[in-house]
Length: 174
Image (cartoon, rainbow, N blue to C red; front, side, top):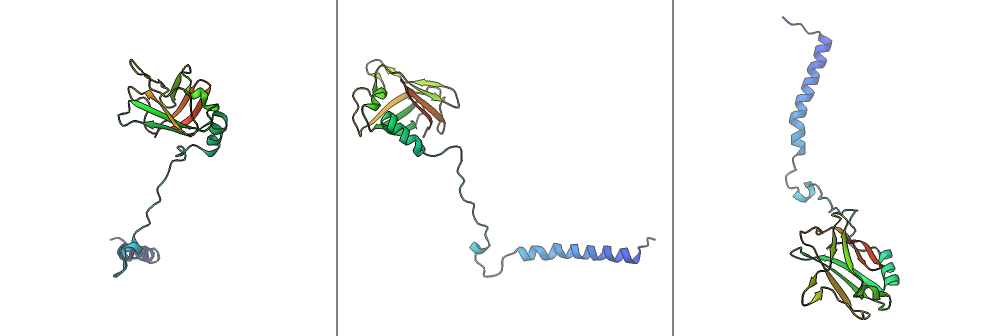
């Protein structure tokens, strides 16, 4: 027969009783009280997180730079529904400074930072380049379209637009 020392046996028995009672008491304490609303018991919903690496807009310092140096603002890069074309648009604020963007001799490129793809403006046989050229006017919106065959540049990617000496870096494809 097994003998238990009285001092250590009573401590072990007390510990077993305490642990067993915790198994029955704690779950009943976690249940909501009758009549309490569900909102008071439900945990709060976490706030929507935004990525610190993809700011939704162009920073104000960059906007001021493009407007003062190049005479343009509202730079926007859009992914078309099919994904085969990427549209770059801008608004002219100073036609003299924005002259390089509408120059027919300056070849525009769009560089995908993730894919390292260099996209060009397609040339249609009867239409020519899919971009607006000529004399720019203040307050008007201008655009050009880049061919994205193979969907190398995706929605949410960062791109650089280069037209002659004009360079816009880190634009978000929307």
